[in-house]
Image 1 (tube, rainbow, N blue to C red):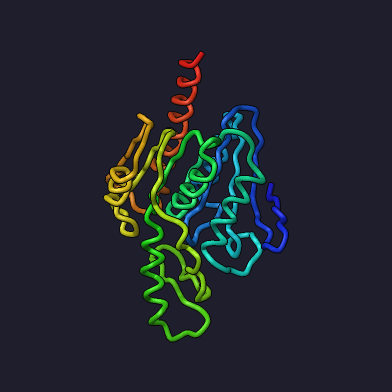
Image 2: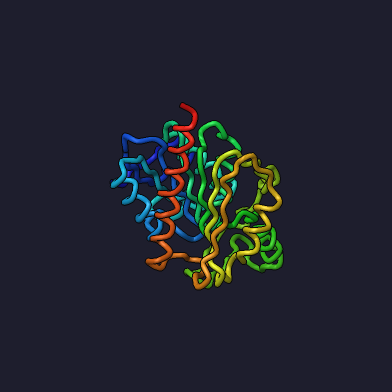
Length: 250
């Protein structure tokens, strides 16, 4: 059921929440130009329903069913914080798709004590570099108020000129202390799979559960039935790992 997260002086956010009895819960963060009704989000929600885990998916402001208008990526990061802090409880597994993986990282930095696992799907860990490239194009644009971001997957997106402002405080550094599984298609022409490998090599980790899976014939969407099936299997495997960890501590 669609719900609305009302926030003082901020646009209301549309989200969907499934309540389960088992811990941890799962939160899905969509990609750029995407929304919470994509195939991956709905498949994850159904899996969580069937396995009695809580699940939250949402739309960033100005997209999908959330209120607008668009303001800035910085405020999208605040959206992610608000949804996590106001709609989830206890330990969580984060699943970030494309840009959603960058948002996932920001939550993990702020709430390390609550994040017990992460899955990056065609992750844009270096999303800040992408915004810098877009900003360069924006400077050269003749439109006084808006900038159009082209897309080969969806319709072009028209954003305000200050859309990229205020990102100086964020970076791509993350000290990992929980399991992370990255799934990337080798036919991805939006975010090369080698960037995922580079990210894992650059960032420190105290976890022995870091995995990179390359899907040879899959593109950026990773939405073919076999890709969705692999994502669900990865989530199931992550929960098995967490259960084994708990048992070893008893």
